[in-house]
Image 1 (cartoon, one colour):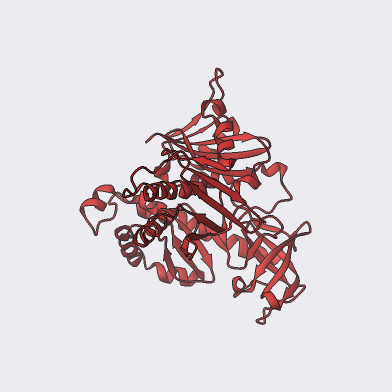
Image 2: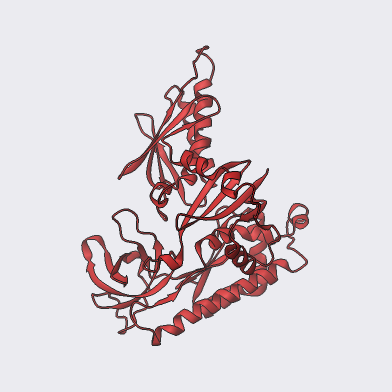
Length: 417
């Protein structure tokens, strides 16, 4: 499969666009940092000031910087680091507290905050206040077992306890495993040391980042930013599964050199310099983005989806369109629903739809087909990097889906085309 990750700058924004077989399947939008100093970058860590605590919603409102407020649920403030007094089990107005930006501000909602600090790498995420080792749910069981055995050899749990941290192993760790050992030797780990060298090196880097932040607390003032992750488009490259694209292409010389500097081991980074046709025209960027914002999405069968975003939820309606059922005994509507499910799984990621999503499939299925359709859709959305759950089908035949809110939807992020 031919695939490419495009990194382009347009309309004072940086776009990461993932193409597979000339189809746009993922878009991430980032503000240029030098033009957006007043924003709160995702995963940045600040010393904020608690403005008020609201017991009825079990949360606090925290001024992070420049008058910008954040929302801190108390369930994410179990082990807070308070700068201006000794922690006594309470969080009160006036506390200067370490917080991390966990969710972007969406519509009228303030950015979501947490006191559970995390430092992410390509292969794992370091988390403060915990000592356990977690694993990505998408990690193959055999890979997971191989990694566990290696951790036991390193006595990693004791190291994590001493550092007062836990880790979550990410799916990308699979790329460090030797393919021959993985397919032929269930107990094998890459003998050339790739796993040990790369994973330990990253873990040491994350330890240093964590120590630097905690050590700086004593001499930094309120509203200071103690940690800011690398720029968003670089995070996209780091966090996208390595087998998701064949090459990275950008037409911006500065970004090209930053990518090469941040990922020196990557040999598939290209600087596009053809003056005959622009990179955006070559990949029909405008057309693909307009399609990603259109309410109507056509399916190959001739059926189509209607996708409508509202303040409270997103509604997706499946229509038979040009399809005419000729044989009442065939399963054409069931097949259309399965085709629609495949497209919906793509559209959720492409448009970055989140919150409550209601899907109205064509209602000509048997009970057994409904159950099979729910199972099929559930299998598709489990591949999503953002937590997505298929809840159930209502008595009216509507399928309920939830998708975790982290970023704004594509419609909200794009300034203009």
